[in-house]
Amino acid sequence: MQIAQQSVGSTPNGMEVSAELLQLVSFHLAGEEFGMDILKVQEIIRMQELTRVPNSPDFVEGVLNLRGKVIPVIGLRRRFGIDSIDADKQTRIVVVEVHGTILGLVVDSVSEVLRIPKSTVEPPPRLCKVEREYISGVGKLDSRLMILFDVERLLSETEKKDVTAAAQN
Image (cartoon, rainbow, N blue to C red; front, side):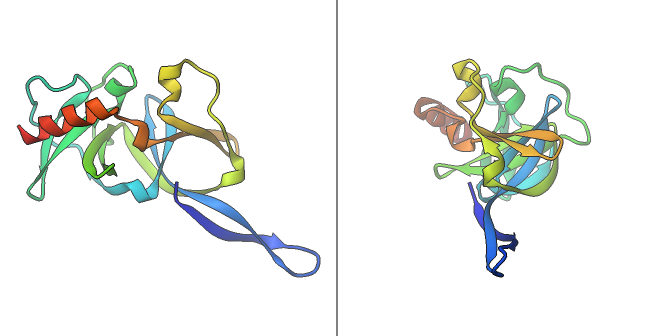
């Protein structure tokens, strides 16, 4: 995660106190708010027509041509086992780089860029293994919680090969 320093006050002797901040892109999926490291995000684009690739993993929605580059697009709803919905005007594709591979991630909407103190993040709750494997923690923001999504854990080594192969076909 991207960490920044921010002055958050001063001590009685006038010395500044700083807190480590996580810089996150906030997005929504099935009514839940997620945050992703801003350094992993290359750009955010509107949903567009995707080309389906035969024999690709079921969570790969298809591929798109982004300025001459063919990019595999993963539906995060499918990847997380959440019921799919039709894309609407809020649906976005978040273009990320994971281990040198450029991917698109379909999300319900993208809301804002946030900075939250690292001290407000707690480890993910003890859920079943599958749900925890993509989550690095839970951040507390005033009266709401944000699930911190670890894009590096999205694909296994085998899945990375399958997704890359789908883009090259």
